[in-house]
Image 1 (cartoon, rainbow, N blue to C red):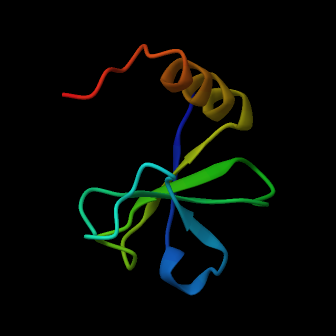
Image 2 (cartoon, rainbow, N blue to C red):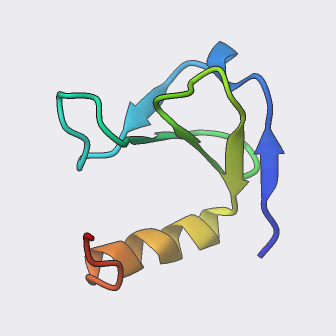
Length: 74
């Protein structure tokens, strides 16, 4: 699977945080829906930083694995 970096993510609107994020602002992942070439993912603590662009198929596989409990919380 090839990953790419998306620069200037701060300028893009529509980011949403993981449903597992808490209101205290801890470790959060944000995703941007509707990107033409994949799913950008970034660290919410660094919105001005770049995002990792993951293929739609790769993102779907990752989400399915999380939901199936293949990545237990530490």
